[in-house]
Length: 122
Image (cartoon, rainbow, N blue to C red; front, side, top):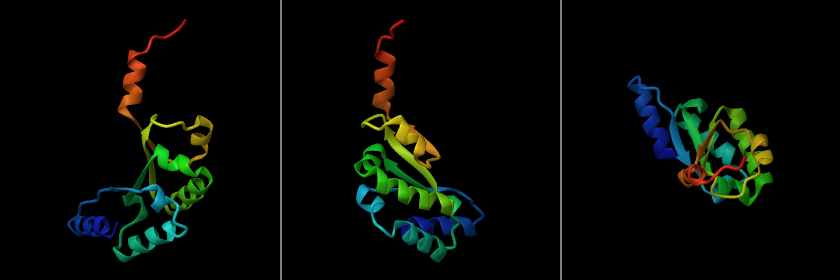
């Protein structure tokens, strides 16, 4: 994360305003101080929260949905963009998905291909 923020800061000095995406694992997502750590790294590198996107897989979120929700709410309140990657590969409830403060859902290719090949019923 530090290296990504250093690069974002370097681009910012050159006048390039770009969002950096960082993938987080379940272990990262469930760290009690993840939001504080991200906030500290952003401040250290003089990068605004809106220039950071955190991506996590659907399966990562579903390991412990309650803890995931709490961390995602903290990050969202900071202004960090949130994305779910590989959606459709697990067993997420759409009801749960509606509760998550995510900005983007990346649907897994296998989910879309399965839809295109399945027959619809009247």
